Length: 133
Length: 133
DNA sequence: CTGGGTGCAAAGTATTTGCATGAAC
DNA sequence: GTTCATGCAAATACTTTGCACCCAG
Image 1: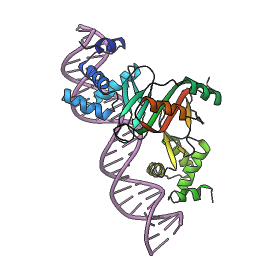
Image 2: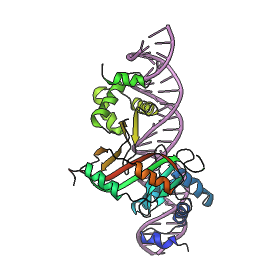
Image 3: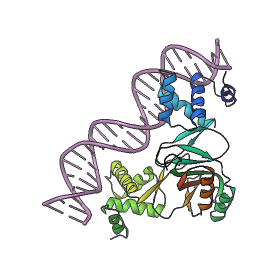
Image 4: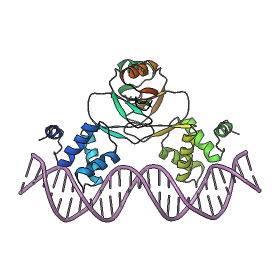
């Protein structure tokens, strides 16, 4: 029994083998788009349906068990929910890294400029990863 | 002859009435998604095709005449290309505002943490606009 | 057992493409 | 006149839904 069984249940999600494998894939790879995830799931479940992937992604998003990250010029990727963080995306190979930054100062500056009451900040850096430079 | 005629041509785009109107709509509204834009264009051109909207959005994106902004939990919007800036999105009414912020410091901090050579930063704040608070 | 999940097929939505006609330059 | 854009229809891609069957709890 995998660690994630209880965590899935805590989010009111039954711990099916498919869900455990999605969780495992995201844990291992960090960030995956639907296409990647489906390809990887097919290796474990030869008859898994794309509909199952979509249904699970959506229900896991609603449960805030995972989160979507929208990437400029690329498909959205999904990641397990963890402490708030930013992302760096390689424009050459697509590699994505998490970056932990304190955005409170810039967020306050932004609130000083607009009349918005800002609650969250999504920040994505684009550039070249170490290998692609 | 509209101001934008020459600007379109400078981007190697013929200044058709449809393109001038897309430009005008983006100039007036700041940010529009495909649906909004098509609805607005239909008022001016009763037989405009959605395909024309898509073709023009894509060619204008390639020419860097406009840019796509990916919004959390919403459809992408498009805006005329201008100096780099961030966005604030109202999670209640969808209103979007441009915010000019100096991100160089945070970008440098990020480069210190990862081995990425960062070229651009996309930052979207979500919260409540003045009216919706 | 019972409720919810899975897989399949079909439907729905979004986006792109091919082609004949028409407009910009 | 030549090149490129438009509009339509068809094709493709992406995502959701309905339903019968099956599994987790």
